[in-house]
Length: 254
Ligand code: PGA
Image (cartoon, rainbow, N blue to C red; front, side, top):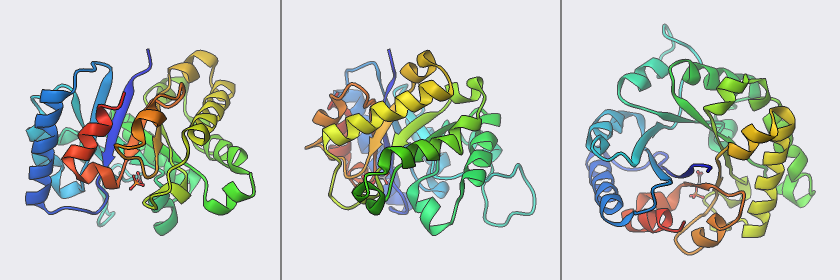
């Protein structure tokens, strides 16, 4: 059975104290309320809070830690960068790669994203690879081709063993932080298309087993219908992951 994942992407929000409080609440609610053994919960706080949050969630086997970014370089003179080995050393298990905000504001291209995935994988950190089309591409009805191309220029270069370690997140850019969610039908048809493309690139079994998350204005009101789609294996949650009640209700939507 494919693993279901709900990952909260906190982006650049919360101070240290707020972050501690939020993760303690989530940790307790998950312990008390989440009974589904096939769902993994990931929190993705900003860099300065990773170590303390790693300690906080240590006793809860359902909770996992992700970083929002990783350097493509191993170590050395790269001011401001954080390496995969550093992340590993504070208990990070996953890392976001290819989020549309990094692609857009930091001009991260396919070549860099592949390097980042490889840097993470080398340290045993699993990339959550984000893809998704902007509004104009959706309106031009080129979205399937656009996302396939994003996979072809990055994920397709991984070995079978590397591919086994990654998670895919489909995040249509027009749905991120806009309150405009993709319909469950739009999500399902894109997830099915991604899985089909992955089966062409790798093989049918590897594609079938791949966890593919939906992201973009997911909330407690729409998560159930999204997660009920056969190819939607969970969510990458932005805004709603900053509220413990909402985030836990999303986790309970499977
Ligand atoms: P959102 O963000 O849920 O606030 O739309 C999703 C994301 O960017 O991962």
